[in-house]
Image (cartoon, rainbow, N blue to C red; front, side):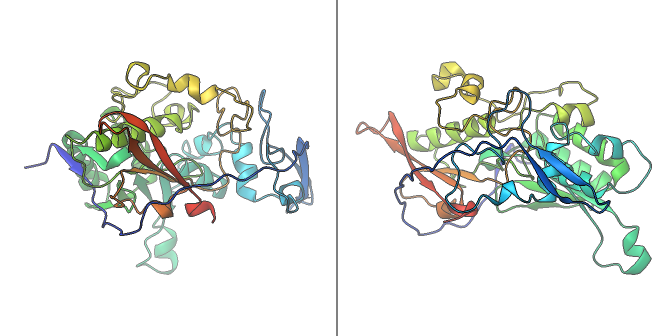
Length: 348
C-alpha cells in the first residue's frame, strides 16, 4: 500500500546548537549600470541589474563589502542572463517552443529556477551521448512531507515519462530523472495540478526548507518548527509568474500546494505578503515591484534554510545558510522566538 504521508529521513548529527552574532555594514555604493568586458562579438554589454522601482541590486548593494566590489568591474555570465530573462522567462520560453531535444546554454541557467537540470546519459559515448539529452526534475517539499496522492503521481510519472525510479535528496525532497524535453511541460503541469511544484527545487533562490526528519505531533516545539518552516518556504518563494506562463499556459494550478497550511495571518499573526514588502531600511527589500526580495538577478547562489528544536540536530544546522532553533516560554507551550545560526553554505 502507498503511504498517506512520507517523511524523508536524514541521519542525525551530534553537533550542539550555537548562538549568532551581527556584523556592521560599511558604506553604500551608488552605481546603477555597469559596462562589462567585451563579449565574443567585441561588444561591451551594459549590465543593468535594477528593475522597475528597484533600489538595490548586485551593482548597488545596500551594504557594500570593504574589499573591492568586483561586481563593478566584471560580472558572471549567469547574472547577466538572469537580469535579461524577464523574471525567469526568456530564452527558456522560446526554447521550449522549438523542436530541438535540448535547450540552449542560457536557458539552462533559467531552467534551474523552474526546478530542472538538463543532463545527458553518461553511460553513452560519442554521437549516442550527444543525442541523449534528458531532464531531471526536483520537487519543492518543505519539511520533507510527501502526501500519498503526490507520491502516487510521481511514481506513475516516473514510470511513464522517466527512468522508473524516484531519488530522495539530502534536502528532504524527491527528484525524477530521464524526462525528455517534449514531455517536460506535461510532467511539470501534472505535478503542479495535484498540489505540488518544482520551482524552488533548484536555482539561485531559497531551496527546500528542512525540519527534523522525525516530528512529534504532541510536542509544541516541533509543531512550531514545521509551521514556521512552511511560512519561510512561502515567504521566500519567487513571485514571478514565469512558472505558470511557461508550464501552465498562464493559468493557475488546479490545486493549492499541499504544504500551505496554518501560515495565514490568523495563525501567524502577520500577513506574509505584507512581510515580503515591508521595508525596515536595512536593505533587504530591493524595491522591485514583483520580486521585492530577489530583484532582477535573484540570488548569487542557492540559499538554504532549516528549522529545528533544542537537542535535535537531524537537519545538521551548521550546513545551512540560516538555521532557526525554536525557543519556548517556560510554560513549554508558548513560542518565545528563535535562536538563529548564520553562515553555512554561503561562507563562514
